[in-house]
Amino acid sequence: MVSDLKKLTQRPEYTQKFNSMSGRHGWLRLTPAYSLKIVEEILNQDAMAERVLDPFCGTGTTALGSITRGFDAVTTDINPFLVWLTTAKTRHYSQEEVDDTLMAGAYALDLVENAVCCADPPPIYQIERWWGPANLGFLCCLRSAIDMASQGTASSDLLKIAFCRTLIRLSNAAFNHQSMSFKQSQPMLPLDTNPADTFRQDYEHVCDGAAERIRGNSRAYVYDARELCQETLGTFDLVITSPPYANRMSYIRELRPYMYWLGYLVEPQDAGEMDWVAIGGTWGIATSRLNDWQPYYGFEHPHLSDVSEAMRASKNKNGALLANYVLKYFDDIFGHFRSLRSVVRPGGRVHYIVGNSTFYGTVLATQNIYADIMREIGFDDVEVRAIRKRNSKKELFEYAVSSTARG
Image (cartoon, rainbow, N blue to C red; front, side):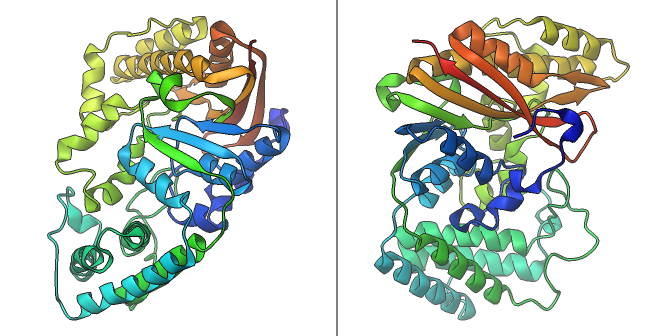
């Protein structure tokens, strides 16, 4: 890793692009996602560790990367869909279960072809922006057919992951920007693509990954990262994670299509409610509630105060609202680190991959605030290293903030 900002490049191997070529890691993407390569480099540095924790599991990069190398891993997230996905990605599958999934996938397509069953479309706002009538009809029938074909077995989870891949590939969504959008110069798939062939390719791809043997064991919990508990989770000698960034990018926005189709979101307001309890969430009602937000942990920091004042003094009408967003983000992060200290063994190492931010021309040095929080709550040997240039504004970089728990 490099620390001189002038020498940094975008390093695509430190992004989701690396994951897409790495077996189970490529099953389903999250925009943005951090790279398996970063996890592997840290594991190489701390090869004597036994238990690894990721308190912000995302798509399970840390957990899967750890157990592939024989470590035991625990990961948590406040979003139950991400916990489900990580559990499915890190499970040990027998060859019999893989073969059953291949047969169940073929059976599901037979059910669709014979119009045996069909579910109602999920209540996604302006769903016609996502899928044309033919693809939407196919997905409704396929969703119901998967339940009939797999009947709650291990095949059910694998086919649902394949379904998530297919629904995105058949959609009008594009991933050629930092965030998912509907603006694209050409279709993601040829216009004459058969949706059944797309799903067949996807469940075969998922089954290839499920057949891979993994060595360690992983547990994933639906858990608030501000309330980590030693009694439930145990203790750890290594933490590797990439928390949400303070950049107003809502993960729930990227996950909505999957969560609606699989039943994790039912009503439109559910997304906003979930984002409100998540660190850094800003979707729907989570934004409007910022007007009345008050600190819970009472965290203060000189740089944070300066940035907040600059945001409020800006000419942008949302300056005051976003100042509250930044203050809430770090108040929550402080609460997280305070609970983290109780589950890290003395001498244990923690590694946080995080990006800085800019608001109205003011740079928010997130990495330095993280470092100061670590020192305050009981970590030593704090190191901040810039690891790559992000592909948006010139001031934006990604950093590894690492430290050691005091004895």
